[in-house]
Image (cartoon, rainbow, N blue to C red; front, side, top):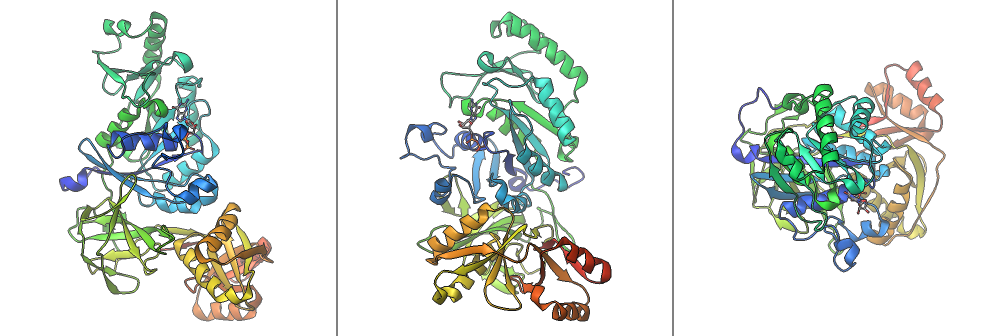
Length: 531
Ligand code: GDP
């Protein structure tokens, strides 16, 4: 990925934009907190949640999410670490929000996969991993909770290799497990890292040694554990691949660190890993050409829209990944879809707890642009070029329900609210060609509940979701006259999405197969490129 490319300007080269993927409960939130702590973005982490509700952990973003107990937004957090600028994009953990997660992963250059040392590769981890693989994203693995009883180290590594079909290179090797866990041997730097159990926010003590045979090791590790460690490392060096940066950057190999997020153990080594091995901001694809980060002109794309972040202001923030250039506040950028210039006067950077006005940003950064609905997922901003970024998919919903305002007088308002959620990407909204009302499509059932509560909370419209006569939706495309003829003949199945694109609704997979078979010039697709 990074090889064969010219050296980037230092400000871009020092940026690391990544996401953390994991199965719920593996420790993503805890790890995020420790990142922010070591990045100097917060002063205290971890136990604040347990100590008192008054002091909330800052990566638990919104009140609404806390009430629901799930993270529904994909916020970004920027902070400095050593010589690096880290942009950590948060992915929602709940499987019902996977579409959001897919899009988030289009905005990052790498991912950290967190697994629980006792549980190994779990279902959600595997799904997210597959998405990363589609994009050949480099992945760093953090095997968490080593302070608890966990699986044998070789077994964990084997499971990742077999389950995910990726080479695993140990970057560190754990010493002891559970109550006997004392630390790890840093295989990349020949160092001993000793965990401090007394202070969970303290960084491990580092002992410089000359190698695994260094007699100094005996001062820190009990004899029996040391014997086992030497034996395991010898075996690991023989049997497991050695870390290879190129292979990692190409997405074929993942380095794995063993640690305990809650004890701050192994976190710094992982952060150093992202910093030192990269990747740097990568080129982005557009319909006509590849956009290189070092290009002078500023370009960026919207990968996420969050409406009503502050219900008092009814604002919307579009999250933009800068693909190239050096952005400065006040710049006028072309909003490619509407062909209109947009003065970006109050862009925000997301720090751990607050938003801050962004005076400048570079390729790789994520900025938030408050707006009134002009910016949609997939939109491009440029200094004049009519770019079309590619790769952000929109998935056909798997569940459909019809929705109605309990107060019929509010039907018009409901339409507006639904369109906003559709633009935000929170749901698909279809307006049937015949009759009134709307059909809402989502990927996971929980989204209906979340939507109903948001519509009521944010727009003051109580709504009812009801079973729909349809179960599948497919976008319809093909030669214009064929499409029109088909739509006319099948009016009771036709609808339009919020972009005005035609959608075929049905109950039966059989219908879809029949159309595909009988009318090969028509296309029914389950995804639509949003950009
Ligand atoms: P998330 O759902 O992936 O965000 O996971 P959390 O960070 O909320 O962690 C889930 C639970 O595991 C919480 O109770 C954490 O306190 C706990 N936890 C996180 N890291 C560790 C660790 O290193 N060791 C132990 N024993 N528990 C941990």
